[in-house]
Length: 573
Image (tube, rainbow, N blue to C red; front, side, top):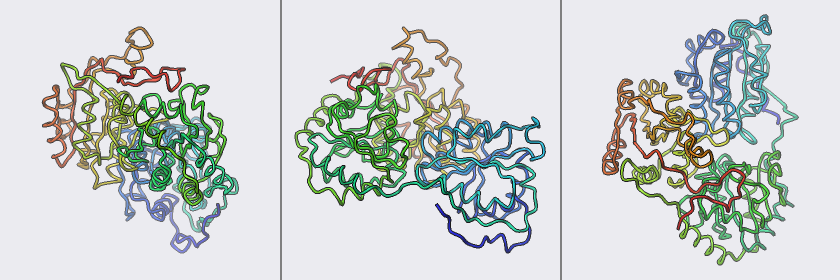
């Protein structure tokens, strides 16, 4: 795509360094927040940042992992690229997990890494790492800047690539001598990416085929993924579902793309999805996938997935169509544009009365269920109470594990951009720093970070950031003194051999919070939950709340490895 040609304002200014030019370019990109951690190779950039009057804030994380996950949370909530600074060597390599996470979950990031000077690249210099080689398979694109005059084009391209088509992370590696070089005449920021031309508008013939299939279907079903959220197409998806009276299943990352309490909603599908959602996938005769990638946690055994369905797949990334599930009607397009075209094309509406009654009966007969333990707090019930206490309007970030699935099952998201979780990579340590980024991206919104006692300890040093900035993030620790999902699998599939999954030396989370100047509280019993939640959400500043739950609790339903969606464990009337 060809960028707009315009005179670079730097060309009419006095000479500047590469670092100063970079800061000015970020201002032009309307960056308002940078997450980072300084070090030797980026000191010129940080010095330029210090001397500038740039209208953005820099958030000093306490670990580069905190920076990258915070940027992901910011990107997920705002829809704008999260921007990260890190130094060379370990600074850059500490970002690898977060970059991979963003790549798998399609989050737009622009990551600037420092690099040793050009003249010593390849000599195993102090804090040198091959950032280009390391990040090539985990980024949408990456650059190493070898001429400071190229910065205007590179930065413009990086933001364009990160935030168009299927969003994703872009890395820009800047050697130290480039950031120190004096630039007299910067190059233009005009660009022409011949090999990058995302398809936005659908092929009209494919839309006609899909409209005809929808009109003829007796058991149609919509599968809504994160692509609906990224395309800002939730309104159009709801219009189509209501107009055609088609039930909707969401993926884990698609939660909020369709209102969770809507009468047509069947909730989340997949490994820990609802009985109604999974059976609808298995029984439908037309499956319209909008913006989901048919990952293994959704499909279960591919040979048995949606066996009766004609499959239509709308996705902006052509590589996803047909990759895992054979597709009868492929539609390569932005989800919003495809849905708008479909809304204009559909003429014959399907008769779904019997089908809707059937899936609704499944939903009522086989709901999510749990039994309250005599001691401790029921984690499923806790999720319901958090949902009620926040009126379902909070931005919820999670870590990865049992608590993540319970939150996905019991917190009914009504709108998009309020569910922030690590899906594809399943990154422990994600939830808390992501909440920091989400709170900075949506400062007027209530942000609740639901984490496990295991994952929280991977990035809890970011409590220092929350304390310093007095960010009103509410941390809910679902504490079972175990790596809960690992323990569940060991119980179910490894004959109760609990190898290294028990956390027997957890800290006192209340004292830990208080050491950072943050309000902390611990809840052991059900009768104390209502009062504790009222206190948590009445406090204006940050809170860390340790809720003790039963260690033996399991996430149900569950699809065992290699099984089909209809072979759910733990289903109960």
